[in-house]
Length: 420
Ligand SMILES: *Cc1c(COP(=O)(O)O)cnc(C)c1O
Image 1: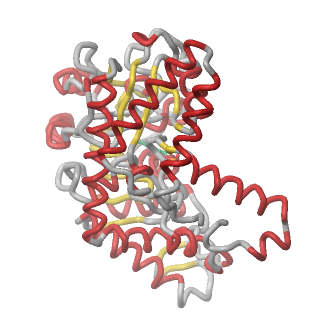
Image 2 (image 1 turned 30 degrees about the vertical axis):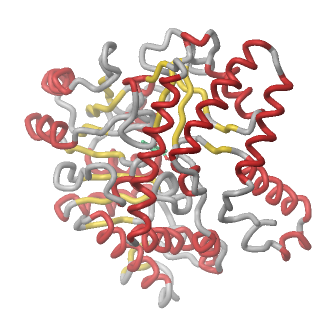
């Protein structure tokens, strides 16, 4: 049963309630390795399901365009103060609806349409909103992209510097969605300073690791930091922009009234709850366990002959190039899902295949670490992944079904917040 219980929903709308229950059970029975997902606490779930969703509060605390903010102002101020304390920043805006709008606000704050932005190419591990051509950020701004080196799979800061000197971007993004290695914030900051660009660090994936001290912080190097709140940070769907005092006003104005109307106050409350959790010592234990699990899983995969981009990981994320296994990413991901291992197919750097049918798989250990799995289980997970890939290559559906059962048995020992 879903926790907290959804009895009124079940009475009013059995169809939706039934689907919610099915999804909770599905999350309970799967090894969830999608690198951008997690399990939020029941406290975060409860905060998102409150009457705060009924309230409009355009503006910022003390300067709202609607009356009745006696309670909302302290909620938002708590979220802001906790964000500042957890990340050690001078300013926080907790209103962006999600990561993509948070990044758009950075463009609105510091660029005119047609001006130059530089970010990591999507196929190399960047995000759509870092100027990729199909995104508004690539259509409305002049975008130049850096990639990774073919021999290392990693960013080459000399190449980034050469490109920045030639193209003179006003904003430089660092960070992305498929980067298995530590980001060199001081290195990016030196380049941004040399060309007079604003360095924006997008820490969406690794915010929880940074909060828990398991990845270096961009604070002091990047004056502007954007993040989602729902990946390793383990909060509700939402986002924040963190900054120094100098850039605060332009960012606040860009979020409201530049891009958004009323903030989602139930989400703000849940962000505050998640940040409260992130300030506890247990969260640091969790963040370090994510990295330990990823390293253990990477090592066990390498032992089984899997080819990892960059050869391993420093964070929560692993990128597998399946070419040597004789299977593409999509059929492998679909077979793994049938076996109870949920992940996504992903392009690898210099992928000869199409983005919708790429060569790789992306894995992350945030959710399974929340679930309580440890490094011992990672060896077993690697074994299952290997067996499923072989079973799919041999058309052995019975083996896939057997593994799904074994995984359900294992996960019976690891409770999930949100389902009982
Ligand atoms: C997930 C992600 C985003 C976008 O977040 P949404 O909430 O999906 O809009 C932006 N940047 C990076 C690096 C991300 O990983």
